[in-house]
Amino acid sequence: MTQERTFFRQQPKPKKSTVYLAPTPISKYKKDLDDTGDMLTFMAPIPGTIGNCSLFIGELDDDATAVINVASGGASNTTEIPVQKGINTIDTDFNVLQHDRISVSIKTTPSEGTKDFWLCFTFTPDHKFAKSYSNGTL
Image (cartoon, rainbow, N blue to C red; front, side, top):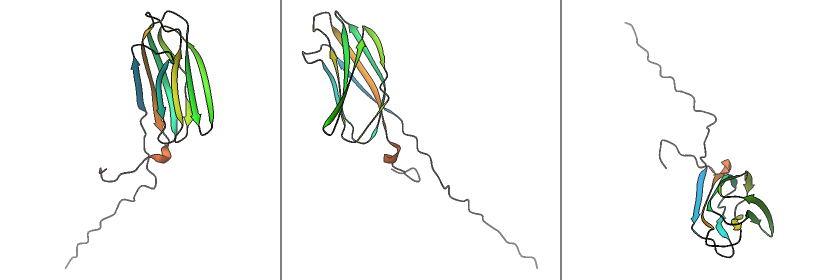
């Protein structure tokens, strides 16, 4: 009499998994600027990176400067960048901490011919804050 034996070999579980965090686009449009020139304010909910900043100015009568301010605790860091009509790419690849406050404003002389401001940048969360899910469930 012959015996049949069936063996099932379990696959080993992966020891390391990779999670990809897609950057989140943040965007703002303003037809006209007020006297303060405030464009956008944003508070980082978790640590991450701000990057890929673009500013489009539709009409501009005078010189303009983009002002990016990052406030963290009691300290703040301000960067001023000259901008012009049309597309402006701003190198903003910098890290932010949880609860950092980011503000972007445009310094220019308000006038009838100065209008149509578009701003966008990406926020990529720190990989330590990625949540893992198994079996496709959230």
